[in-house]
Amino acid sequence: MEEARSEKGANYQLQNNTTSSCELNWENDSENPRNWPFWYKAYIMVTVAFISTVVILNSSSYTPGLPGIEASFPGTSRTVSLLGLTTYLFGLALGNLILAPFSEIYGRRPVHLASTALFTVMIIPVALAPNLTAIMLGRFFSGFLGSASLATAPGSVNDLVSGKDRALAISCWSLGTMNAPVIGPIMGGFVFQYLGWRWIHWIVLICSGVSFVALSLSKETYAPVLLKAKRKRNQIQEGNERDDQIHWWALLRTNLSRPVSMAIFEPICLFWDIYVGIFYAVLFLCFVGFPVVFQDMRGWSPGIAGLGYIGIGVGVTLAVFAEPLFRMLIAKHPRDSVTGQISPEAYVGPVCIGGILVPIGQFWFAWTARKSIHWIVPILGSVPFGFGNCLVFIYTMSYLAGTYGIYTASAVAGMSASRYVFSGVLPIAGVKMYHVLGVNWTGTLLGCLEIFLIPIPFVFYRYGERIRRRSPLMSRLS
Image (cartoon, rainbow, N blue to C red; front, side, top):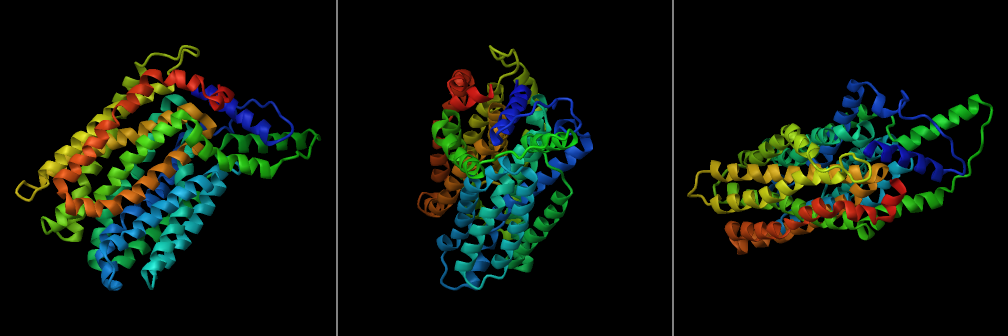
C-alpha cells in the first residue's frame, strides 16, 4: 500500500507542479532510487544520518561547556547561559517550518548541500564569540540553517526504501540521531575539560565539513523531481519540448504552508506532535538533570559525568538492534480493510511499548539517583528510558512516512518544530525544578506526565484507520 501511495503521490505532485502531465513507467525504472544498488543507497543513508547526527550533537554538546562560558563572561548565570541551548532549538523549530518544505519543491540534494554549507559557516561566529549575545544569535542561525538537512533526512530515507524495509531503514538512520544527545555531552565534556568550550564548536564544524563533502557525492532521491527531469529529457528526444507554465509563487506558498496546516488540521499530526514533543522535551531535560546528579551530587569531572549518558545510549542501540523482533510484531498486525496490506497503524504497536517503558525508566532513575546508591543503578534505569524513547521516535516516524508518502518531510517538519519548541523551553524551567523539587520529585513529576500520555498511541493503534479515511489530504494520496 505504501509503495502505491508513494508512486501515485509522485505522479500527483508532478502533475500539479506543471500544466501538463506525462505518464512514465517508474516502478521498474533504473532511475528510481528504490532500484539503485544497495551499496549506493546505504551510502546515501549513512551520509544523511551523519549530518543529522552532527546537527543534533551540536545542541547537546553545548551544555558541558556552560561553566567555561560563564567563566569567560563574568556575571552570566546558569539560566542565562542555557539560553544558547534554547535559541539553537528554537532555530531548529523555525527552520523546520520554513526551510524543510523546499525539499518538496527543489528536491532533497540542493537542500542538503545548501543547508549543510550554511550551517558549517554559522558555527564560526559561535566558536569566536566575544560575548554571550553572539553565542545566542550564532546558535539560533546555525540551528535554523541546519534544520533543513535534519528534517529532509527522513524523506531521503523514505525515498530509497519500500514499505517493508522502512522501519529498518529509519532505525539505522536514527542510530546516530538518537545517540547524538548521548554522544554530545560525552564529547563536549572531555573536550571542555582538556581544550576549552570553544573547541567543542570547532570539532562540530570539522564534522559538518566532512558531511558536506560526502553529500556532494550523492544524487537526488526525490521522485517528483526525478520524474520531471526524465519527462523533460523524453520531450527533447521526441522533439516535443514544451515550456511548462509553473506557478512558482503559488507552489512555494503551498509547500511552505503545508507543515503548519498539517500540524494544525491533520488530527494525526496534531496529536503525534504533542506526544513526541513532550517526550523529546523530557529527554533534553536530562542535559540539566544528569549534571546535577553526577557532577553536583557525586562530584564527577565534566568528562566523566558525560559518561552517565551511556545508559540512554545503550537503550537506544538495543532498540535499533531489536528491529527484527518488532518487524515480526508489525507483520502480525491486522491487514488494511481496503488494500489487504499492512496498514500504517502496525507501526504504532512499538510506540505503545515505548510509551510504557519511558516512565518506568524515569521513575527508576529519579529514585536511585541519590549519592548513597551506587552510580550504576541510576544509569541502568536510564536504559529502558532510552529504549522507550527510541521506539517512540523511530516508529512514529515510520507511521508518518507510511501515512503521508511524499509529504513525509512536511509531516516530520511540523512534528520536529513542536518537539524543538518544547525542548527549548523545558530545560530553562528544569534548572529551577531540580533545585526546588530535587531530583526525586522532579523525575516523579515528569514520569506522571508521561503516564498521562500513554493512551494516545493506543487510540491510534485501534482507530487510526478511521482517522486516516476522514483526512482530505489522505484522500488525494490513496
